[in-house]
Image 1: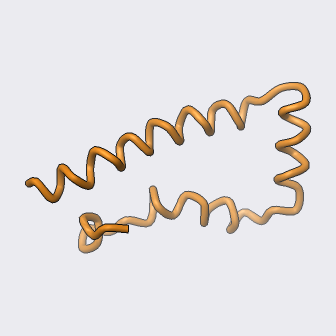
Image 2: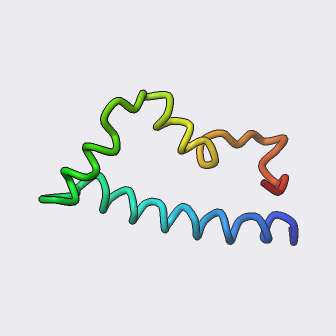
Length: 67
């Protein structure tokens, strides 16, 4: 249980932080939106998914392994 707890706490903290940050970026307005669009221009869907691999790429057999 201690191993699970040591992985869960930082992971959930990262999820909360990432959720807030994604909300801010995806709902940007004005200059921030323009900068975001320039940075994302030409980025493939696969590149966006790779950025979320840490969240969605876990499996039962590796979820407690340190990353």
